[in-house]
Length: 406
Image (cartoon, rainbow, N blue to C red):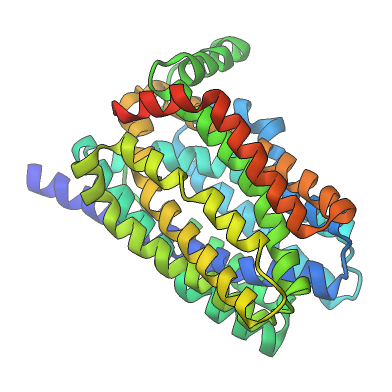
């Protein structure tokens, strides 16, 4: 009986893992296609680039806390399935509008707002379902495996995306991502998981407050949540500047931009592969702290990159370092939240912090789009570094001292 149960759980995890990997591949293609569509085909202004980058994150501010409550109230598997279908339809509208010659920036923003709304529920359910699929003792290895395949998709996806954009155009390349979400939905629908319907139907406001209290007042998780919020506002700004810097200031082609993201994917894969061993050796908290020390170096290298071959090389080095840091820290951070949070609070804790993260990423993207138009891309990146260091100076001692104990 135990062997049969174990085999069923392994089979379900493999389907869950396959679906996540396929959708990650599609997203990696879109990571190349979307900036090309916005910057080159639609000739967006810097602020419009920021608006587009922020659009998919805005729903986290509006829906994130409510999504957490319903992720704890509803079965998580159906949420995953319908969220993937919704994302497929939202993205699929973009190439259809382009085909009819009517696509405009505001239409793209609406499509990404819808995409973000489905993503709010999808990601809350994704991070909350995994502990039901694998024993908690194996969560680090399971998260690392997901990170490894995600990084592998980000390695191959941008190269394929750059080639597809060059051959067929950015709108057609986005179709790949839309199809990947449909496959993800089908695989998740086939998962077998013991998931009884939660009986709780209490006051939504109370349950939101309960999630907020757990997320921000927890002795260990609270400082980690604040530190991650700071990272997201800085990274949201930096990645908005990156597309403008690479595609305009440095004159990258779609294929070269795809190679840049491929370099990021390769080092993310390396980092994700190292994460379980480093987490065991140093502790999850120290791995997170060390990884986050790399980001200001990344943005500084990008800020000083001249519009020459040397500048292109510096940008490749910067994104490679970013990939290594992100790949290394992600699975230890996920494990901390999944192991320290009770299952009945996991949906709200995941949605609460993700709501804060994505809301601040939107703020960072919008701010960067505005600042690039006023002071240029390089000064904006330097401003991101200063902002991050000031905030880390304010929160850093508590964050690092807490994280080091984990």
